[in-house]
Image (tube, rainbow, N blue to C red; front, side):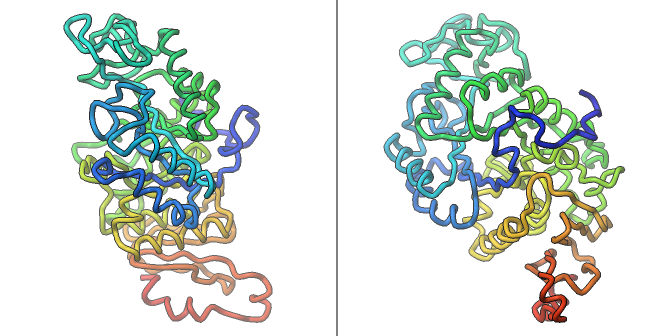
Length: 436
């Protein structure tokens, strides 16, 4: 669709879009990291469900729950076995039941770009699936990755057999599997390596399996000049927007553009957070209801650390994504492994988002975007700033809602307090520590 998406009509006119996307009041939780398979994971998460629900998360993205050649789950083999390195089928179903009781949806990690074979076939490669459900032949594998199927409709995931989604028998089996996952208790889907096959198949799978919410991992490199991130990332976010369009607008996508820009901005380059038209520079600025924002995941952070967010600026990052439009995601490591203070600061930001009814389509007015300061008003009731520059909103009807190192958030006082001339003592006492 080209740059027409720059001014994308982001409303509720599409009757085929799910109620979750229309509401736009999600806060997602990624419930694992790269090492989680070593730690009796389903039991660990089951113990944390109460806190996850109380904190305000609406959906928890779980690691791949099916049998895999690798313990992390991303080299699937027998997709119909729910016994994995994360725990047994019984423990998984216990976790899913507890999540259902606490009204936290379970997001399945849908790894269907590639699949490890059980026996050798064409060319001596392990590209046959004998002896397990969905017992495909080499015709289920793309010709680009050693099979007898068609050419891939996307980018190759090298070194393993890539699934040929053009084959009707393959799509039929995958649809049956996804419908089965829905019955097991997964309500949401996350599509792994979404660059690997045409988004039109994602559309077909969503329409048939009917997940309540879907998000795709369309991750490719941002625009760099040497090692320096370029200011203009429009072509990068356009590719993500095009993928969303290709799904019939049924799926959201992780906003890798915002991640790439934000993690450079917090290093003293906050000018990056305003695009030439005065909008947020990521997918969030063009199509916020489909932009799933995040700081890190099991690939970019954790022990893989392929593209990590600066660890000393995590709270500035969360202040940005939890006060801004889009659909924010919190990473397990930050929430549970970085100490109680970080956990509680994130929960406070989530409380503000919910209480002030910030949602995926909330309007944002960028007020400052200088090297050491970014400030914005979201809707009409929330102002925020990040960076070490001094700033606070003008007017007597603002009160400090929360603050910490390098960030502060204000909210409008209720009108009755303003008429009485009541002012926030906390705001005045905290000014020096929070605004600079």
